[in-house]
Image (cartoon, rainbow, N blue to C red; front, side):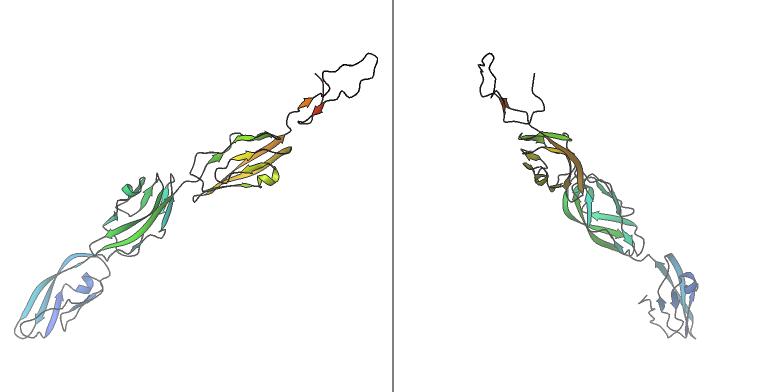
Amino acid sequence: MSGATPTNVGGAPDAWAIDPEISTSIPGLSFNTATGAITGTPTGIHSAAMFTVWANNSASDISTTISITVQDEAADISYAGSPFTFTKNSLVSGATPTNVGGAPDAWAIDPEISTSIPGLSFNTATGAITGTPTGIHSAAMFTVWANNSASDISTTISITVQDEAADISYAGSPFTFTKNGLVSGATATNVGGAPDAWAIDPEISTSIPGLSFNTATGAITGTPTGIHSAAMFTVWANNSADDISTTISITVQDEDADISYAGSPFTFTKNSLVSGATPTNVGGATRCMGY
């Protein structure tokens, strides 16, 4: 405290006194009986208290009445998580302020958070930010106020809402492709957030020559040039929210046989040995011949 000193336009007092005792009524304060000054640092909050101050000399004992109220100190607030990055369609938790000062009587935010980021709300009793954001938002700045009788104190926070994680699957897996047959329809279904990038492990073009993986769409395309037993691949769909994966299986079977007999129509001779009536196959290997 400073400045709580009396003004005297009369005779000089020989002594000063106060009633009731100020250090008892308001701990931390003291009264100077030589000057009438009130000094110190109040340690608690107090509603208005009345005191009578006496200035005494040989002429008379003169008094005046004063009132002292001790309000709370100003708030001292911060948000440890700022700048915040929330995720679309995910519940927000932990976005609460820390206050090492006086208790706020009310909280406020500017601009209105529910308008700027639909799905979020601001608690005017606690300063907490809660809800589930429904869209994607680049960094937005907000001023949060913690107000009490001592002062209106503010801090600035930043909120970004990133896309939700992808949620991918391949409806056709396990896939069975055919050697020398064009692959189509091996595309991913995603019911989550948009991936920033796709990846596959192991590298499909090395494992199954002729196939390729599109890192922009997750599609598998191409024409396999060989036969392959079932091979497992992990496909990743990555964005700022998370790296999500699914596992697919690919088998490449042989192509159909493609046979012909160059000598047909044949004309054989009774009692003569037949030779050269053999098929030509330019397709997949046959397991048996007949009908």
